[in-house]
Amino acid sequence: MEISNTYIESFIQPRSELLLEMEKYAQEHHVPIMQLSAIDVLNQLLRIQKPSSILEIGTAIGYSALRMASTLPECTIVTVERDSERVSLAKQFIARSETANRITVIEGDALEVDVESIQSAFDAVFIDAAKGQYMRFFEKYSPLVPSGGILYIDNMYMHGLTDLDIKEVPRRKRTMIRNLKTFADWIMAHPDYDSTFFPVGDGLLICLKR
Ligand code: SAH
Ligand code: MG
Image (cartoon, rainbow, N blue to C red; front, side):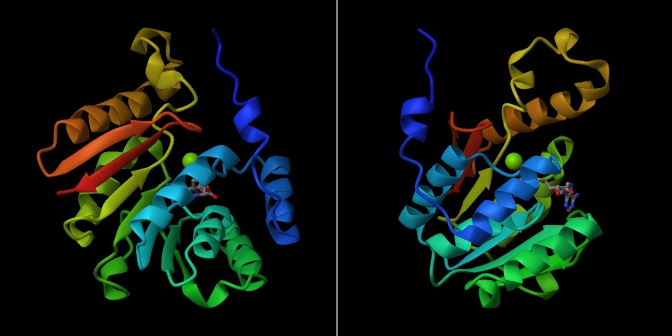
């Protein structure tokens, strides 16, 4: 039987005017913000984990950063985005929220910026940027996470493309999908992490550091 999310989605809570405006902007401008049901799962995991700091790779317009910050009233968030137009939008949206003083947006390529000069450790890292680079993001940022910390990684399904035989994947996306699958194989076998897929949204991977 085909499972529909309609029932579960009927429980998604109403959101502030600001968040609705951001959702509308994202939809109209094709900004790939996280799906609402996946954000709810991520936020619930964060309530359980109770991180006091989160590093986010891939701010876009600041939607997930705002959602995480309002879920965890004490938590600070550092978030990295390379697209300058999105950075300026994110800063404007975040400035209008009550959580602005806890969110720092860094403009730059996450593979190049010096996050450590701002903060050297994070209880949680949320990776939601270029899908072909996940291994590199992970290698760069996982050392900042202590034992017991968690890396949350979005889009492991890549809209269903990871389900296909590589020959069925459009040619221009093959390298990205190969990289993503190599990363999945590597992290699932990694002795320092207990990792599990959460089949929500576009596929959320949770890596708990031993
Ligand atoms: N986390 C956001 C959505 C992020 S979309 C939310 O759910 O609200 C992915 C973003 O990652 C895009 O805006 C893209 O510009 C950014 N990105 C991709 N590769 C990056 C990199 N190497 N460094 C920084 N940002 C990157
Ligand atoms: Mg995503």
